[in-house]
Length: 109
Length: 121
Image 1 (cartoon, one colour):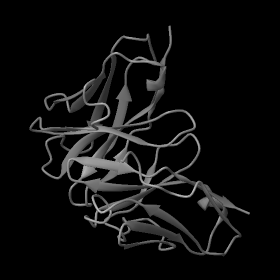
Image 2 (image 1 turned 135 degrees about the horizontal axis):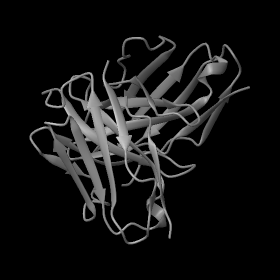
Image 3 (image 1 turned 180 degrees about the vertical axis):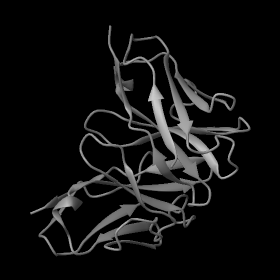
């Protein structure tokens, strides 16, 4: 396995909620509650927005929430805002290995 | 506030060795909570984990790159470094250094701004 699978793109209107899925396997997401999510605006470094599946770091909006079921993790953005337009990546710890997701471009219509 | 800053050549010739250094400030590189990581992103593509190191020198590498990668740490200078040998055009990417935090579930909580390395003759 080389990467976790995410949809290439997700879009929504301002105020709506969207969900990004991140599918792995029983060796990574399925075995560890150590999934993190990152937001990346064009030309910028990724920003850490969720850790340990559903925990938000200090300063991150509560519009971002995470969850996990089996081998799939999910990031939900509620009350979508223009500033949420960015690329989003999941990441899973897997013992001696680490996997990033393929990335999802979020477009605010 | 923890800060990380990458430095190194922006252009490397094919078959040569790419060398980058990350300088850590605002926290101890010897912190028991922290691993120090390299991550790269080819232009227009996704993130790829390269590897990470603990202050003791213990390393973890991406198996797909492990034969060409060396990560080292110099605690006296608060720096850690990346060497990637026998580079090809496919190694062209923005290279990020980051902290991997144990207390945040092994997440990458602080990142450098990234540095673009182009492999070309």
